[in-house]
Amino acid sequence: MVKSLDKERSFAEAVDDFRRLEAEFVVRGCDDEFDVLETRRRIAETILTLAQAKHPPFEVCREVWKDMVRLGFSNRERQYTMTWFYADCCRYDENPEEGLAVLEPLVAELERGLEEARATQSDTDYFEYHLEDLLKLRDELLAQRRGEQIPGKRTRRIDEARRSTPEED
Image (cartoon, rainbow, N blue to C red):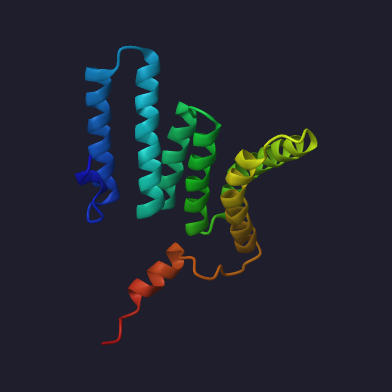
């Protein structure tokens, strides 16, 4: 597993490693359906995290996301985190509509929860914590939708332009 996370390994190599690990764990270590599902979820989460970091083609990210959604999320916190990773893949590939489509329902849910917590004078930390990063990413996707560049953020187009331009010595 550690070898799979090496920066020099390609996304495809890491996915192969994790799929082998998944198969081994499911066969040897899972006693019931819940354990199998949770093992598959953890592997899917790791692969989505790798997709966000290694930037395979967007179609690959979309398929990884579909697999994650098919497996479901263990809890809301995992859903918020994994949605952020996928929406960030969408931001990187300048696909704001798809990113917003998965992000906005969760933002609305968290904002409702925050308002309810405020109305009942309950603790708001949970909602504020999760909203912070999701709102920032939503704002970046909205800026992309308007055709604006996001200062300090890489995109596939920017990375490819840098690779195709010979560096000065």
